[in-house]
Length: 591
Image (cartoon, rainbow, N blue to C red; front, side, top):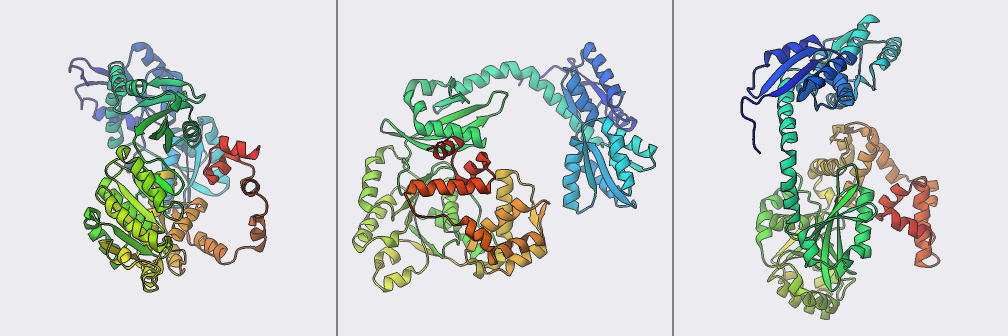
């Protein structure tokens, strides 16, 4: 991006809500030769009046703080940079607060209160937080706090001034040099962003037009907003009308997150990657990838497999981490065995990710739902269009009869020429071999390595790391505010036998996060949840019983009605819980 010459200055006006901030800004007024920085002092409405004059005088950027910055942004057209309350600033204030006596409260605009309440939670400090939307609200809140016995109030200029008028100790949240210098850099970035926007627009347009995959953008009504060159030249327009394509759009609009879906159209298999575009008009962008295996009964394509690393301090966990790279490089099949819920698919996902990352999909094949003959026909008929690398996971291989076991052995040997093949089963396979229900060579000779996953009860030293991994995943996927678990809560979890192994632990952590109202999972939440497992109420059991007479459609409708009742007829929550979009839910409710 082209930069300004040094004599073409960026004109910046700092409007400081209090004198101390003005003094810090003045001490760094000449720190950058590209910036011409003027500084004035004015809080809230007084600051707005200064900004309106600055707008007429042609300033490029205004820098201010807190409520003053918010008001200026609302009432002027000049770009405004808000001096953020940095972590350093908050830590300074809360360290200072530890030396004061009496009950403390924080009263401020959301850009102050939001971060403060989070830090209070993390530091285990009891500071009441009140968010205001205008300066007029401060007096009433402070009067209420005084009546309740609060003696110390933290806040912005207007809060501190009013607190001192009614006899409360006011502590001003000040901005340090780090925050001021950051605001200068943000002002430069914002200025250059606006300057370069016009020239960048043509570059972005060219890049999207020649993106190396077909791409299309649609609005909420399903109308096409944009198609790139490859879509126009290489794809049939009928793909847009495909029911799976329409379901993808509905799901992206409803869930507001990235969705992958497999579509078979005109004898070609496509992977659709749809994701929402930010902006005033809600849009969905869809990128189309060809030549992936189509999902059918018993076959599932995992294009964006959830990736949780092998966690824990047990000898097993350490051994898996040490050997993961070696296992991933093996060309011959691997066999992963263990009790239900011990994380066999998690390990298969780790092996896939170690080898391929997200470059190609992982495909699971359930041999209970697809015969060896069907599998052979499906894969060989599509072989020329399949990616020539990836991971294939075979489930329930031990359920095949003896004849099919021999056929699958030959077929797997062929697959390993191109793909990493992983066989996943419950434990007890050696006993099936002894009883001659499982071919000896299929179990002992076909796989290069047999990996046994022990029950969670045998590797409890891994529980803490697993809990934290699930908390981290939930935080990344859903933005939950839970960041950890109390030691006494963890100790309670360690006392539980975990018959459902890691799968049960994951569901438990997800439930604990859902009911937690602090930054840490507390002991009371764990005790309550474990009690619900051990002593479910008979009334709740009766409510959750679904009659299984009638057709499948009848039972499906009863299930939907039961979930509707549990979610207070909130169709958005019901659709999300059932894993369908709202359009499909509406259709099923009215059929």
